[in-house]
Length: 281
Image 1 (tube, rainbow, N blue to C red):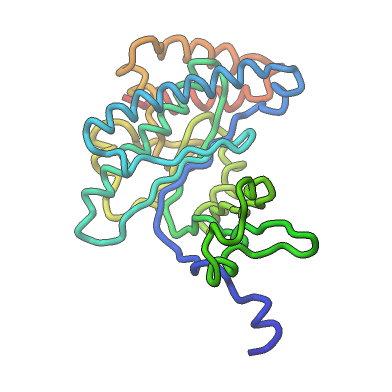
Image 2 (cartoon, rainbow, N blue to C red):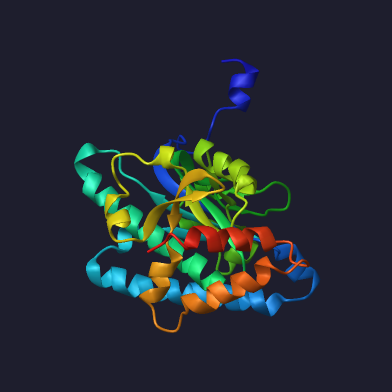
């Protein structure tokens, strides 16, 4: 084995790809809100999203779906939703349920933002990605000179033989680094800036195994066009109509006002929301 082989020899379990559906969602005008000290608006948005996700989770738990609900991550101005898909052919129906819950979570984020007058855009992709956590060496105890590797000492002595009471005050915890990467995620990040519209979209070419059928039939996701290009769009109108306290009319009124506001950097995107939303059920 060469030196270079030794340098790049992993110490953790091998990283393996898997199939998943992911959404990258961006809050438009986020930097301006930060500059204007509108932190409370961001907090209210995240609080309401969290509450809606909690209510959906309660429903999913009662149905036994808790093991396949999406992961939710907040990365500054971008939110990431991720759900693992199952490659086995006999689990096509399960993938359909996974996708339906995934789209419902996207509609929660989109509808909550629109009800607060916050424009967001997002893109959904399906493909192979890598996710998990890599961990540093196990905890070590600081000695007078070099750290004593706990795992090595325990091979020879028992825990009580080595360390007196209170030894954990000097314990250095292992470092864990979560990772989410792959072509599916990187393509979403690259393509997101090209979506000149408010909403969450998925290119038609990225549907496979008919996992979206039940979601399309329930009107939670629909075929539409954005600037003449075909997309599947999260149907925020249907989601709002099924939840009291939300008003589609208020969102459309706000979008019309913003679309004619010459001082709004997102005027064109709000106009686009009005155009494609006219075709939503």
